[in-house]
Image (cartoon, rainbow, N blue to C red; front, side, top):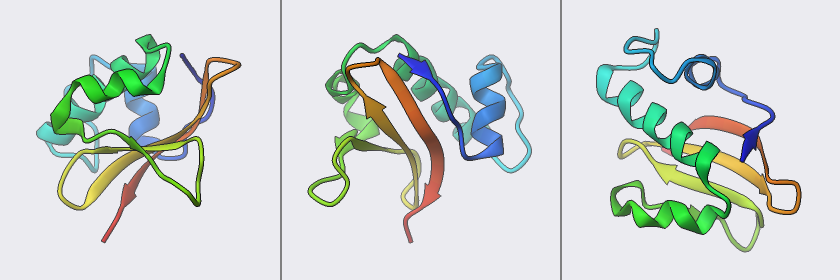
Length: 99
């Protein structure tokens, strides 16, 4: 899928260059995990494919936000995004603190 919009500047840096090893505001583990997730998002054809990595705990946020997905990065932080399945696009890719 094509990533159309990115809300977080740290995530945007990794979307633009997933080979980065340092991003200001992320520790090394966050950089690695988010970069791996971004690669998976770009090669997926259906967001349900993200469930193949159990550690990411990928799931759709229902019922209030259909089409919005969440992936576990740290106990407090999630990578979230909206999927337009028909257009094969990802919108509003963001890094959110859930607590």
